[in-house]
Amino acid sequence: MTFEEAMRERHTVRKFTDKDIPKDIRSKLNTRMFANNEKYSVSMRFMIDDTNAFGFLTKLFLTKGVKYYFILSGGDIFTTDEKLGYCGTDLMLYAQTLGLNTWWVGGTYNRRYINRHATGDKVLGLIAVGYGENQGVPHKSKSVEEVCKYEGDMPEWFRNGVEAALLAPTALNKQAFFIEGKENNVVLSYSNGAFSGVDKGIIKYHFELGAGTENFFWVNDL
Image 1 (cartoon, rainbow, N blue to C red):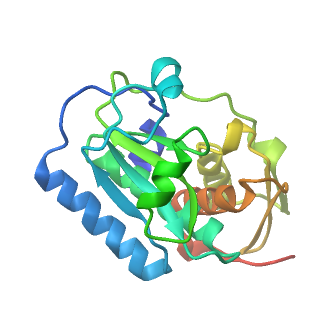
Image 2: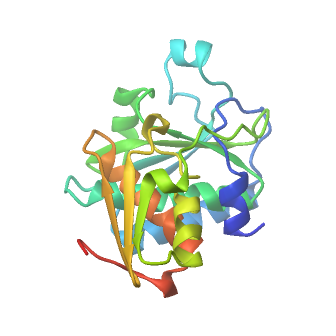
């Protein structure tokens, strides 16, 4: 499975089977995580056979079977949010290519426990990973026209990028972003909020995957 295929097939899964992730696949996930940590100066950690990420009520009403997960953490600086959004997306889609399912968890985890086990000063969430009881369902989505504007005739790469961005798992599925394009310059703006930095990283990864990084440049304004 390619990353492009994984992007289209990945949906949020909150309930997992008790099937263990084989050692060779766990090793691949760890290797990918460490590569992201080094490249983007973040401090993500892969937790294995650990069932303490969630409290009793969350396990009772929302999730099941989570025993593998990434802790998304890094330095306490303003760029960390976007970096973790970007790197977390890479891990989610990589896991999907390996036949796994994922759930990006923004705030329903056991914060005290997770903070004790994080390797970075700032924790922004978790990514639960494993074999889902099902493959999840697509989230409700806005249209391309609602979230973008291109000056002139919209090229195929730009539309592909926006369509990919609409597949991204944004906070509360609000899709509170707007993408503008002019020639090969692209601007991403996002409504301010607790998860806006993380969401920008997630959207950037998806847009790049859909559009192709060879076709455009990110800029601050047009």
